[in-house]
Length: 162
Length: 107
Image 1 (cartoon, each protein chain N blue to C red):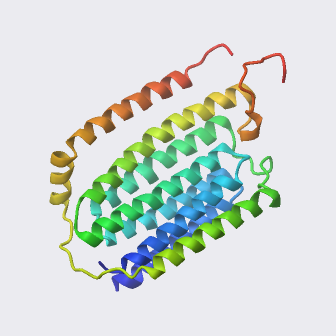
Image 2 (image 1 turned 60 degrees about the horizontal axis):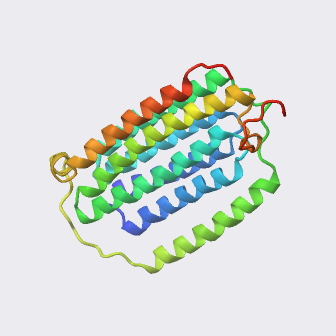
């Protein structure tokens, strides 16, 4: 049951990501991407990571994508008739390179048959203990990084005479 | 583990390649380029979470959380840069920003 659910959600993720990439209207692309992130969050939940799934929905689909939407509205970019898709000259090399990379990756992964062990599922308690004891320094570094990002965004976004 | 780790890794590879293709193809719009970077980072998160599920260690999920925090910082800075560049040139085309010197007399 869960196995089928995984494949269905993987299919939805890939299809909505392809639609988001090929979409001309930036707002529609954002909405497709939010759908893709919801499916990916469900995959995270199936992979026994409920906390990461929640953060994915709250931060990615909730905050980051809304930030994108705000910038599109501020800059007034939501006119699909003014935007043209990149032409064949741009798509062809991209598709060619990506095909090579994807083919080699899939070939490499399919040769490697994974060992099937049955480890205990990671609970939220394990996650929290690992986060705040072993990786306590990382929390501090992340908080400094977010502070720097706020200061930098304020500096770049202030109004000045150009 | 509900599915073999190989299938999770293949899904992550497909997502990563889609993001890479988005970055390579959409050079005419900075917003779409940033969306491609988001997709690639999500694929990396999927690898971390899949590994965490495979071996029963919480470290992978911790790193997924770090990627989320890093991405939110990166996106806020990048979008501030996009707003700044749009104020200067009234465009989001990457090819319009090719001058290093601050030459205001030349268009």
